[in-house]
Length: 132
Image 1 (cartoon, rainbow, N blue to C red):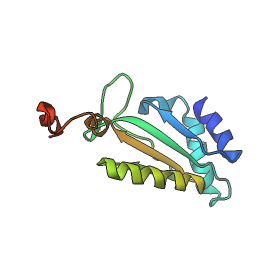
Image 2: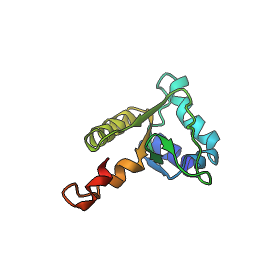
Image 3: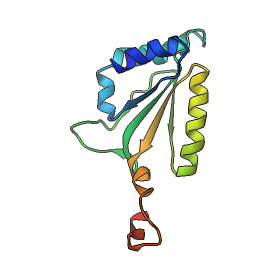
Image 4: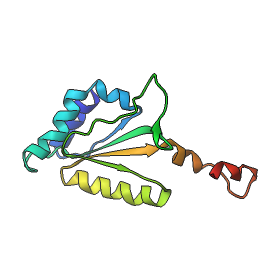
C-alpha cells in the first residue's frame, strides 16, 4: 500500500517521502516500486513519480539480520541510490535527494544505522571508544 499511495501523491504534484524500515519490505510492494521507478525512466521524464524512499538497516557495509532484511537492494533502471559516510554528507545529500525528487526522480536514501547511532556518542566521555 505504501508505494501505491506515494505514486498517487507524486502524480498529484506532492513530494512523498517513504519510510521503509527493512529492504525485505520492498518485496511486498515490488510491482508498484518498479513501476514508480521505471515510469519516469522509460518516458524520458514525461511521467515523473518523484519521491524519496528512506531505507534503514545499513550497518558498516552490510544489512543486518536474517528475519527482516536481505543483503541486497533491487536496482531498477531510473533509481538513484545514495549512501552517506558522515553527518555532513547526510545533510547535503538529503537536500539533493529532495531536489532530484522534485524534478521527478525516485531517490533511495540508505541510512547507515552505525552512523545514526554515533550521533549519541560523546567523544569526550568514556564512551569515545565507540567512535572507532
